[in-house]
Amino acid sequence: MSIKILGNGVWGQAVYSVIKQNSPEVSFIGREEYSDDQDILILAVPVQAIRNALQFISFKDRKKIIINTAKGIEKESHMLPQEIVREVLGIGVEYFALIGPSFAQEVVDKMPTVVNLGYNDKTENLNYLHKLFQTDYFTAVPVKGVEVLELAAAFKNMYAIICGLSEGLGYGTNTRVALLVRAMEEFRQLCHSLNLHIDPIATIGTTGDLILTCNSIESRNYTFGKYLADMTAHDALHKVGTTTEGYHSLASIESFENRAGMQLNVLHFLNAMVKQNDPSKIRQMFLEFLKRN
Image 1: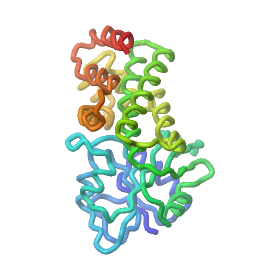
Image 2 (image 1 turned 90 degrees about the horizontal axis):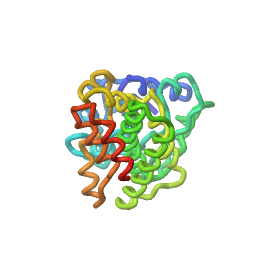
Image 3 (image 1 turned 120 degrees about the vertical axis):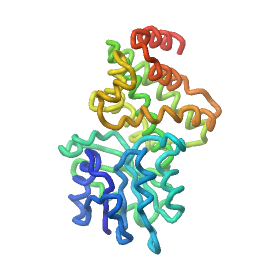
């Protein structure tokens, strides 16, 4: 099968490095270069860029395979990547999501990594894709339930911001774990309210990805949160310098609360922190939140 990767940033390069070991037919592609002879299209662009990129794609007579690797929520529509793809391209798409704890540079450096390959319906292509992402150091474990994985991928970016903020304020592991426990319970309740089942196998792409992103300065979202302790969100975004998906996803909190019929206390607090333009007030607000929740 012909495989094209849309997006040649650090994560696109990491995915390429894995696939290249199993297929010579993988290459990068610009959005204007897509033609109808590609069988597999891997989305490795930020969520906010997916819709625009897909406008250039024509499927014609052949059903295509889309593999999403982006993590986030579209700001204007409050859609997850799967929803964006379905809306733009229609139902003639076999959709997968490659999601899990995986810093790009560590994948390139061939450090052992395990992620999930989410699918909605088993097809003959699932086994092929499973093998495509299997190397001596990289494993993609198939699991049914794309929506849970993409929801977790978006929410862990937001939770990583508050964990980074905790470090920026000078707090240690005790505080960060306290936040993580609250975050995991909040996400569990959200999934329950949305009638989404978390398969135990999906723990890799849900809890595993949350733990990774919320505990490392390698995470842009964690770094953004750390900067928030001393500066405004505008300045922190400028200092990070690259796409901070968790920041953009905060615009969708109310939408998901309405869908689930519940309040997301941790993310409500985070939103208030991000909107706070006086860094001197952050510490007191942070401590008050921990006392209340």
